[in-house]
Every structure is written in C-alpha cells, then in structure tokens.
Amino acid sequence: MPHRVEDVARDALAACDCSAGHLLASQWVVARYQQLATRVRLRHLRRVGELRVPGQVTAGLANFTLGSDLITGDATAQAAWTSDMIGRHIRGKVVWHEIVNVTSGVLKIASPYTESSASASSYTIVQQWIPLDPLATFIGRQFIYAERRIAFDLRQREELDKAYPSRQAVGRGPDIVAEAPALPDGTRRVEIYPYQQDPLTLKYIWWPNVGEMQPQDALPPQLQKYALKEGVLIDIYRYKMAQAADKGEIEKAAFWRNEMRTQETKWEVYIRELMQSDNQFDDLTFILGVPGIGMSDSDIRTAQDQVLSMWPR
Image 1: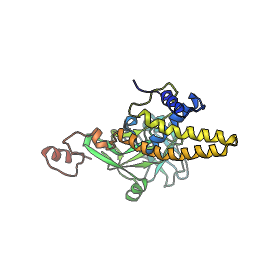
Image 2 (image 1 turned 90 degrees about the vertical axis):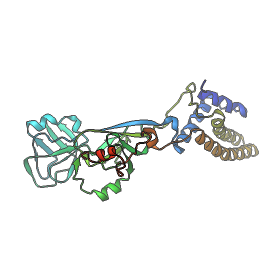
Image 3 (image 1 turned 60 degrees about the horizontal axis):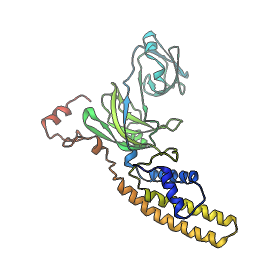
Image 4 (image 1 turned 60 degrees about the vertical axis):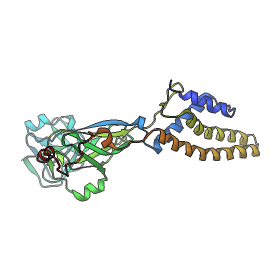
C-alpha cells in the first residue's frame, strides 16, 4: 500500500517530539517533494504529449492596406477566417503579422501592415507558435515526427532566427523545432519550421510541477518514505530553532541550527538516492522509438530507407 503525505509527516514529527502539528508537517512533505521535482525530471511524473500542427489557410483573396492593422477578405476568405485564426500569423508578401482578433470576416493584426498596399491578393495563414500542454513546466529535448521516423532536437530561438530570419518557407515536414515566446499565462510554445502546408502531429515528453497535495493523498511508491522524512527534518529543526530563539534560549536555538545545517547535508545525499531509485531515462528516442529502426533519415542503409528518403518533404 502506498504511503500517504501524512504518514511521512507523522514519522518526522515523532522523530524529535515536535509540536508543529500534522497539517504543517504535511505541507513540509509536499514542499520537499516539489524541491526534488525541480532538481531532476522524475520518471513517474513524465508524460507523453501530442503536438498537433494545423495546415496553412490560403482560401480566397485578401486586401492589405499600408499602415492599417485590419485585413479584409472576399467571401471565400471570410468563410475560412474563424476564431481559430487568432494567434496564427498571416503573410501578404514577405512579413508575417500575428492575428489578434477576427470580427465579421475582418482580421486584426498585432501591428500595422508595413508593406505596400495590395487588393485582391493571395495570402498565407500559418500557426507559427504552437502551444504545448498547459501543465508542461519542463519539456524533453526531442520531438518525434513519426510519419518520417525523425527525431528533432529542440533548438534555441536564436538559432532559428539566425538560420531563417524571414521564415519564407511553407512546405511538408519540419526541419527544425525551436523555443517560441510563451503565452501570457506561462504556457510554453514551440515554433516548427518550415511552416506546415498540411496538418501534422509530433510527440514530445513533458513534466508537470508537483501541485498542492492534501495530507491523505498518496505519494508515488518511487519516493522512499525514509528519504522524504530526512528532508522534512530540516523544516522541523528550523521550527524548533525558531521556537527556542523566541523564548530566549540561545544555546538551544544554536543546537537546533547546527542540527538543521547537518540535516541539509544529509538531505543532499538522500536526494541523490531518490534520483537513482527513480531510474532516470530521459532519452525520448528510448520511449517512443522502435528498436532496430533508426530515428534519422540521414543514412540510407536499407531499401526501406531509400523509399522513405524519396518521400516529398
């Protein structure tokens, strides 16, 4: 039976006859769990995410006016311009503009149009920045494009800006996945380039934060009860030190301060033990890959590789 938050709290309190109470000690247990989760990507928190990228929108014709932040379209374009366009980017000639609102078939962009005016012009709308799972605090370093058996390393945005400053390509299959600006609520986003002509799906690994827990909540079995207790003892010793200091018992406060410092050192050892027991495997290709099949199309070794290399990109 898995141990609960209050079980660890009760054992820690009993270890030194502390009067802090089970509720406060339970909060300390959760805080130590949260600390551990920020130090290492815990295997039991790992999730597989699915990133769905929409294809381009080019239906109809649009009117662009120099200095205006509104773009109008013909009847065909207006039928395609739904609220789903908000957050995507539109291009009339060269520069991409973020769409911030759609009202009665009229697109509002984040900044005024800076190129020469154009009437009844073709256009392209793509999703430049694709949000990840809202709970994804940490993400793995690889994205898997299963259709082409390719694993992409997550790149820094600066690398993408340097290699493709104007982002002109719209095609089939990505070449690079890079960090993108996060949403105001903190949701992380990525940019996949070239932008997609057709919808596609990528897989990735992510980890959530450890949220609030109640005393009766069960802890993952991978977290050893004795190790978590050693972390909680730091908080208990600090609590007893503060109590002694408030009473003017300086020598006793110094004693508990020394115990707290010693316990902090011990806790670092236990953190390493917890990390080892969690049995870390952060390689996304291990999780999503197929044994015996290469994850890259850079080397052609079989007839199947030859066929896949000739697929349109």
